[in-house]
Length: 156
Image: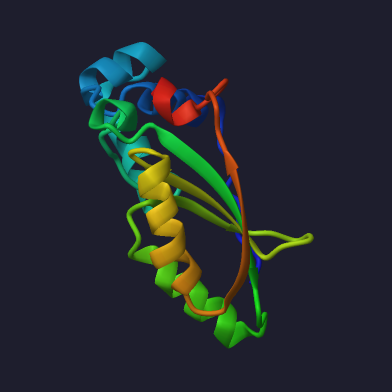
């Protein structure tokens, strides 16, 4: 199924940039910042939401301040890559809060996960007791992050 791409003009892009920088900005301040009056600015934001370009608003939480500063990237190979097995694995990862990201990969393994825990001991337990027990997991390889050189989520 092809995704329809709506044409965005310069004002739409300014709105998106401003909201990406500060989603709590008032419509009045947003309108002033991009050079529109309140009503057309509000209508554009509503259209961007209705078109699915703006998919939501959220608080960006610093996981390090919550004691979750251990990051591991995990390659996962499945024993079966038929649609039902891929779907079962995909459903299973949804409920695991330790998994921040899960990407299906075209390459030498099936999924790449970003896993965040308190420390290596907690990660080791998660790997052995939870991740390895997910449907279809045949093999994992772990890469521990030593430092985040760029993390857009933390810059928000």
